[in-house]
Length: 291
Image (cartoon, rainbow, N blue to C red):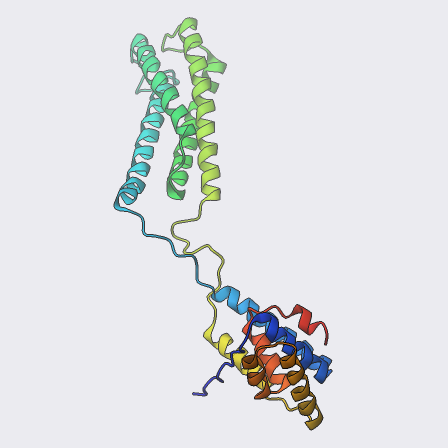
């Protein structure tokens, strides 16, 4: 297996490293080389961004874990009772069938009053509560649509037929039942929309990570090191070496730290620029624009 080249870390503050790099660009006067440096730096910055670790989250406490399990159960139970009450309320004035043809009308109205009040109260609470997760939202939306369809059918039936059927309801019965039925239908729509919005907004529990982060490839990281090493190994002329040494000594006299200058003297202008651009965390814009 071919070993990746060792990374050269440049010594000094960013400003000192860039000052040396600006002289390197001035010595080389090589636009093609600078263009390849820009590409290396852009690729390295992009790779570092994908390789950055995700923020570490503290583990939830035992109380929080219990709360996260209890709330969906409580929300589901509340919604189930609300839907059952809404369904029982609706079918009390349903069209005559073998199941309800001989049901006492007074009893039906009493049942409708009780279940209607329960349905209105619990549906209102359900419409205001936060939907726990996407699976709850999906189940809630499905059940709500089903109960709403049944309720609308019964409302439509009574609007068309009125009390003119074999069950024997009076106009007063229908007048008391209809406002509740319409209100419950409106609340069912509100709960269904709340669940639908939650389902669209929440990630699926089975879809895996949704952060959009792409796992950085080790091979791509090694490839960038090889590119940097190849750029660093390109030769320079004797005249460029002499000018490099002269400019570095001038920088030393102007206050650039000795350790930065001493490292640069062991390198060439090309290698200094290559490892600067490979660093990926040092701003290179004011350096490479000079090329």
